[in-house]
Image 1: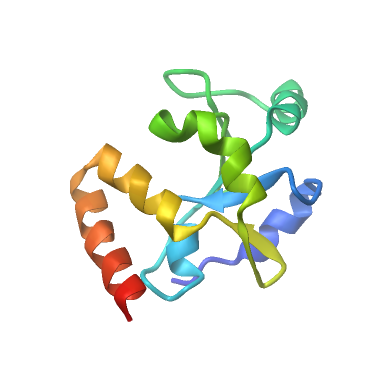
Image 2: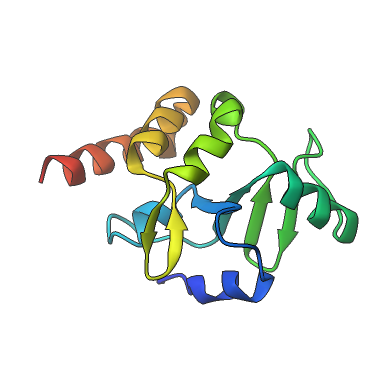
Length: 127
């Protein structure tokens, strides 16, 4: 299933305040499929959204809107959120986190699915 990233535009988030993270940067490049959309957002956007939507998750760091998951932070990359947004690659008019950041995060998380993704990302980058 190919994700319809156009649903992000319905959120009306200001340009330069968010980036697509998780499997999205892989899906848009055809590396593998994605079933949801993970966004990282600047603090100002998080504060605005959290005032209007239920905040969930163990660390109260997640807002779900349809199949979109909006994250306040991302474990080992939390201090790099603004940097990742600033350096996002624009593909089809949407900002996607660079694969180098995604690779760093996947190596840190090191879950089974991350190990598979690391191999796929490295293969993609080597071609």
